[in-house]
Length: 235
Image (cartoon, rainbow, N blue to C red; front, side, top):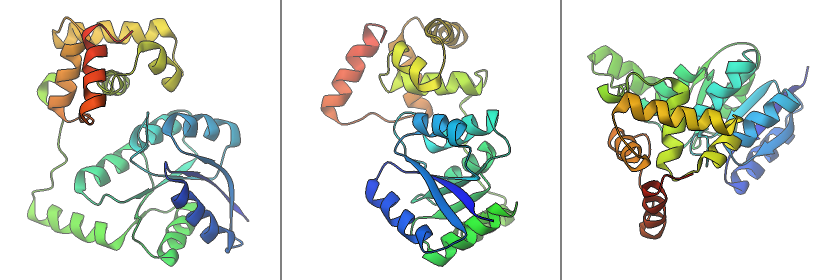
């Protein structure tokens, strides 16, 4: 039986390479592609692939958030993360979001195919380098899953999504489109977060998100634009 795959990566050259690899194997068929997390969620609902091969570093919704969003409504779909990052936080976050595999981008073609075959059969897969590091850290008892700062512990997963996007300078209208929410719902989330976090404006939310490591400031021009938007409310 052919396994239908949706490719999600913001680099076209990466998608082209993966598509070429899968095209040579009769077990897989690429049925769609996306370069961002929001579109990936929508395409998954429309195309219903067997496996979503997902990058982490995506614009808008990142791969971890997109994975959680996909599985929230389609728990039968399997997500395999393909990432250049091999740190414990990325791996643990991916697993917690529901991903069934974590494959490094430096893995061989055969390793990628093995991972997809394993996931297609209902199993789980970690790149050997990742599993070795996790095992060593667990045995030492010092695995750092980087819990949220106490100030953000009271926020729901959806509120954390909204908070990160607010901190990245997205307006309420943009967030509503990205998360498929109503505009008033997004505004309600913002007001609720301000009350929970005891801040009075979007700039305060942005500072907390940055301090918590939910996002990072971009380069100087984008930073000035983002902080300017935050200061006026980012609507």
